[in-house]
Image (cartoon, rainbow, N blue to C red; front, side):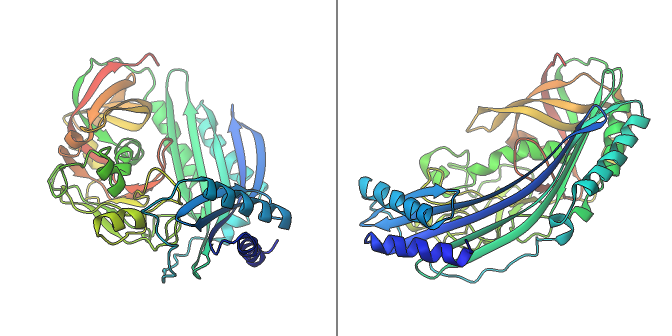
Length: 443
């Protein structure tokens, strides 16, 4: 069914049930994935999905229901379900009316090169990447995906916010007898990906980290590549939320306006940054405002949904999630300002350090002090006298983020980084002192 007709049918169905305030979110997702392992492609899959989510407001109550069927009967059914749920719920004294229309700048994030990518094109790029790893006597595994999504939010007040984008992702792990290397990248325009270069990086890491030595746990100067920064530092941004602060579940409670990081740490949330992706509006259709979350180490801004802003007499920042939800809001377009160093310069300037490619199995140990534990993987190296001396056995760490970001000595230029446990961000590599490695892992 045409998108225009979906909203009109949902609105008509709501009115027939005596409800005039309605919001719809229509999403479509089209993705193809080429997966490879043991130096060969073993899977090529494609998925196409459409989804309709309907929220209604009636008599001070609200509820949402969803469906992936867009025929007339299913649309009427999902509206009826939302209305029934709302009428069965409790009155919410803080419930706001639907958001009003607002102008929203649209970034160009849809590229035909990505949307029209074929299995043959992905297979060709994968074959070249495998060739690089195979030539090094190693085994390659990974994925190459391409796809496009569309998101349209409308309501009975006339709001009509829409976003369309493409995304390509390439990830590769190069495995040797006793070592491994990894690289990953994502881009709205697949022409920005360099699968062969990523394969060379992964193969080089696997070769350099062979026969890893075991070092004692302790505090080391650490050089975190962008993916490792993303994996660890990216864990804290759900706390930059007015709802989280009010509920007492944010480490920023009592720390707003305080310097908690080093003066060389500045962090923004900017949906229009050219390296970012995602919609320029939030889950209610409110345009996302740029925020300075941290300015020279000082906590400045936090995100406000419309509800959180109403409670505190503030202006909404456009970071709310679709209602109803229990989380409120959070910044999702993180940009950490960088410096003029590079990973190579960080290595060259280090007397003794640990170079980390990425992290995994990250878990929170102390929510208020923001202490995390986790492990290194796929390329962990000892740096001595300004050069990589070889690979080391992977470590488990136990590290507080405030301590880490107060001890950063060098920053590279920020890049779009991809990890496994958080959404993509724009972050630099970091060299920091006194990173706490607590034990050597078994693998």
